[in-house]
Image (cartoon, rainbow, N blue to C red):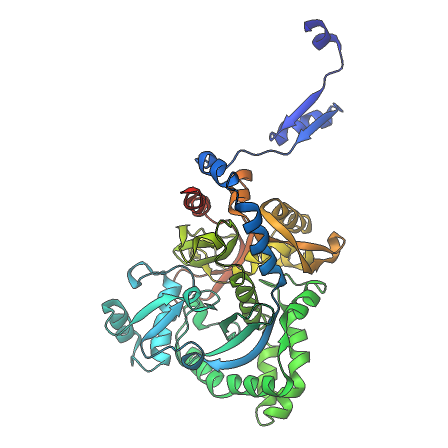
Length: 461
């Protein structure tokens, strides 16, 4: 045995240590690579119990099939007080539930702006005092009300909401209208221009879109998203194609239904490449919600951040949140901003990754690297790595550059724990000081403890 090892041709297996494999390759040593990573720390016992659950395979098949078969349709635009039953002093926000005391700068700024917009305070200082006291104020997570919101995600009664219905399973989800770029409420700004824009959106934009949709009928968002993926969008940080497709669909109806305001409405939408993002988020929300409530399923049905916490929800665990600290994205910064200006990750827009878009579809959007950093090869690697932690490939959302392979969809808590791979998220970066606005964009990883906590809950008999 010893002599054969000394004089025979070595047979080398490399596991995990990439630097060793590369050194052998440079020496032309044949080797077999085993793609293995240790599970997340402390997850082994719970992982064994979850993988042994006899319900798991069938439950996950049911849950992911519901998610992938959803048919989101944009059916209307309505005020939040009508669509969601919001009353005076009631506000929804992005991410897991949070109090004013723990809220970040952008979240606080958006809530102050919503108070001013609703006429509940005459000045920012008065709004802050009322929010701090909690008198007559109710804060709750958008996700608890079939709703999602970008960045701070604050929704107040007078804001107009996109209404998206699932034609397959019957669910409904909502998202606010996109304000555009610059100083906007979702980044915590609340100056006169922000409030003025919100009023215009309530008086002109919302009613015009509502009238147009009544005229042209529901808009098939699943088909539109599928087309946009093949035109270079990934539907989180790049929505240029999707916005263009949306405008093409609704423009004639806007002109017919709101002739007095058609030019300003279409000009506003045309000036904001992210206008479709909010419709896409509601489409993702209604699709993920279709997979909720399957006992024994380890499918992630929500990922969301409030600027302080990053939380997930799992199909088989009801409405419970599993959280960890939100991280600061790593990416490209605008102007003179840098990491010291960045707020921890914030927003409900990670619902796009939850259903196989955004960071999971970056291979479809090579231009995204100019926005979030890295190289085109990094975008492809990000997408292909996500097949390792997902249950399926989306039948409609396909990536031309991968031979029209479906995007990786249906995050499995057990696979995350077993591989140690965390979901890839690409995101905008908000300034930590309220009202700063967007300071950059990049990639961020969720906290591992959110997934291990969910795994523990799944393993608890």
